[in-house]
Image 1 (cartoon, rainbow, N blue to C red):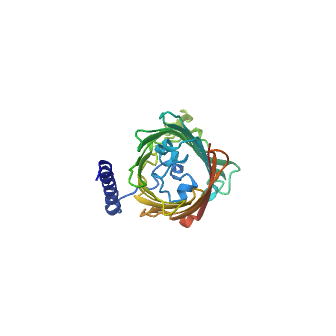
Image 2 (image 1 turned 180 degrees about the vertical axis):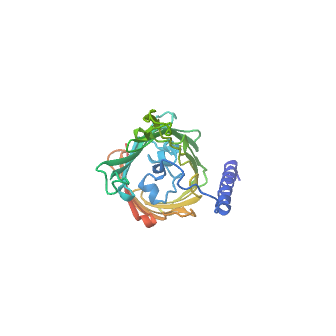
Image 3 (image 1 turned 90 degrees about the horizontal axis):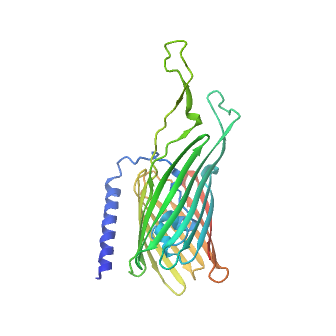
Length: 346
């Protein structure tokens, strides 16, 4: 048994043992569900990854890797881009746009991305006007990110994101800076890859805005004093949805022009119980792709589950390609979500 194989076995054993320990013995502990901000950061990116149940940390080798594992963009040999628009639950609009560029001469790769969520306008309802005051409010969330990744060896890659996060509801707004760090390791064991990523490490979000300004009477027992002192209501700071994700992916070739990829990810979020994502992708001549997966296995009170999808990769001219992917995810009582992703390499 060579050194690389021994190291791989040790790493996989330690990580999976720790995760399974939490899974088996931590089921009764509090999960902090609903105690984090910026929930839109937990919505997965890319129809390919979601068709595989979100088991993508060790698979990511396209522009959507900027979300799943930034180390993956170091393996992209061409400039690439991806665009996705999703009609999320309750008419929420969800959009993602990203691009990556290899720097050449082993200098690594850089990437840029924007992820935005918008809530349609809603009527302002109060105790006095339960049917609406005549005003409307809206809400939105956005993240802007810069990425860099590099191959430290021919098998080991590391990458990171720096992100500006902002959320707004009516006249209130909160912003923060956060970072993601990911690694990707090709074991050399006949297509076995290992990936890991820590996402959303940064300061929390605290809403501030004009609606928090009030008039305050500092001494209500005395008449004639100033009862219009300007004050400001204080809001709590809520942490970002920090998540640690570890994944394995194995690719085999069962026949000429055929490729089968199996993947499994273990997730350890701060606002939910541990879970496992499972996925598979079957490729024919690297042109037609069929996918299936299961998301959030073992997670307490999960509404997600079975996923499926397909993709078509078409060569435009020269080395340029266009890729169209589709995925469907079962969201339990929330219904099903369909998504389409357009990818380009040039």
